[in-house]
Amino acid sequence: MSHAEWTFAQTDPSQQLCQIHTFSVLRRQGAREIEFIITIREYVTPRDPSMKFFATSDKQTNQSVLPFTPVGWGKTLLDALSECVRAIYRFEYQGD
Image (cartoon, rainbow, N blue to C red):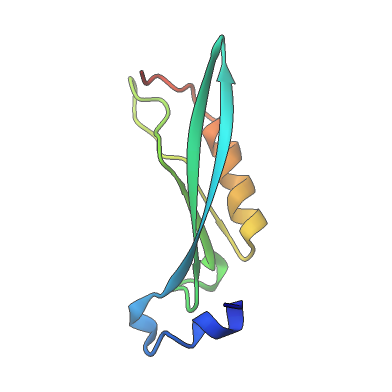
């Protein structure tokens, strides 16, 4: 189904219909490799036009001080994904 087709399934902007894209990135930290799964939502009619694409990570960083969930957003998938990947490296991962 092309982008143009699926967007017609939304009958009201309040439905917030979105297509979901999933990515994986490995963060090396010392001898460890930590996999972060990034989920990006591509909205038909975003509440904020600058947030057509919104990315979130499945893991938090900085857990022992103030937990931080890496996110990213933008007008393109690349903008949201790149911002979220950069945010993954902002703080140390302190999980298991």
